[in-house]
Image (cartoon, rainbow, N blue to C red; front, side, top):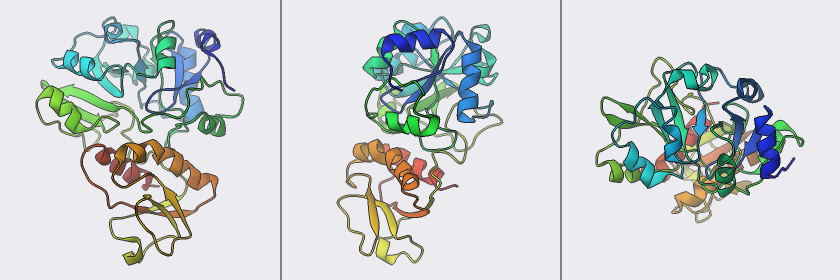
Length: 313
């Protein structure tokens, strides 16, 4: 059910959950001031309570109320990438943020989204806590119809059109005086390193507790079984007649090819990624061969990571 911003504001302040657009993926939003609504997000998604949410704010100054200290490099990162697809994990004043929203951690994740509709909404009601608008573990929603599929035609959605990036925000944590990548996302490591002036480590293994969204091993996964391969389709003995691939390549013998974009355009590929994975399930595809002959740097690194996790099912 598509709603306008005024209706969204009223619903949020009354304790409802509303789907909102961002430049990355759609989110299931609740007002931070309503713990009942925050609990509803976990119930709607089937999300484990140890997996914290992201706080969406209107501008970088808005996080100062909640944060104990701003680490070195915060201003440079915020100036370069906010509004935009960057999330920063910061130490917080715990009494100001409900424990459920932050999984009882002494930190919380903050970002300023750049979608104009959500930025306008945040001017009147903030912070909003919002994970991706999908059932936990499945591909994220990048279109309003994805939300209707997951949560029903009557679920309130602010329609912002298809998501621009199509993959989630990059999340940075801070430890021992340096930033590190807690989740790969729409901003590449190389872009971040240009601002910070040093190489960023990527968190490869979850520590004793999940510290931000997107760290569970199986995630973003369709029901379809994905067969990942670096080899050409015709040389792969273990393959399916359905292919997830690229428009500038040929897959002789395939029954159907689901095109992500061209193999030299990671922006287009990320934009179409989740929509393509969802189409596999909508068309009742049980298995698909995925062309993984793609680079390992830049945005391709995020695309590869999402596909590996999607294949864990």
